[in-house]
Image (cartoon, rainbow, N blue to C red; front, side):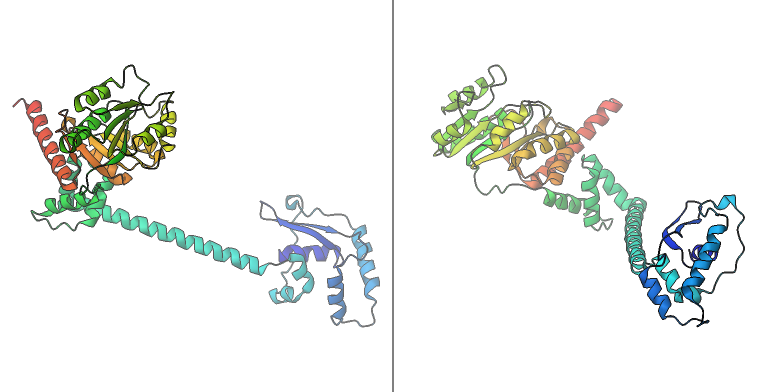
Length: 415
């Protein structure tokens, strides 16, 4: 830039007005200057040059400037923006200190030292943050490589994968437990896994208004029948009512009416002629109100209407999501994501007796932080349902994995 400014001054004189300067993609500097302005120098430059002592005190500055302007006008124009069209003039670079002391050069260049310094500082900070992220990632990769090289951790990972647990849960367990290669490592891992599972306290009996939600065929109505039967056997039929909002399927409420006749409890149907809140208000003094909902695919358009009804329901209505342990992990996560719009209070794990692996459902409730209230493991009413306990659930997961591993081996080898 200093060379370009010096070149302009040598070519057209010190009275030219520099209108703009920029760096071209080729690396050259393009400068636009004007000569035909009255009073070509800015007032600041004029005042600065007036205060500077001159080597020829008797010379007239204005006449000298006008002479040089006339000479520049008579000389042929040289395009400054096309360096390829002219030979590069050889000239001697002025000393750096001279340019720095020259107020004309300083003003023409519009040096912004503060902005440049701030930009450099910002770039340095950004590079430091990128370096820190890279170092952190390298540490994680090294720790993973070390764990893969550790035979104790490799065996532990394989056994945890055999339970059906997700990679996230497995890595979290391995990071939290210091494996010593002893016999109690496996028991320590399982105990710590049980601590991860969120469960609802079973110290108090389930009471109040509870709605059971979930996809089709997961066991919502059967779970309601089991819980209602247990309550009736313990406290009698008074204070229990069954409500269904399933009007989408033909005779969908007949199973619930059958439970009502057997247990001698009232059954209410919420349809287009009635409102859920009105029915809940009618039985607000009952000790146990169980609400059955329509089972729908998460992609069903009618599901939004049902979720909206649950959002508008009374605040006293608790919502439990029924999750079948026979479903894939990704299916369970999708169901949880869809039904989480209504502020779920917990879940019921169903079909434990039909599942070949409980690790998928356990991983989902751990990752989603969804408390487990009940586990259901059969069709018998009212026996095959019980309050969730984390250690019992882990024991069932280990037993299921070992049982189906042996069954698969006997089928594979024909023994």
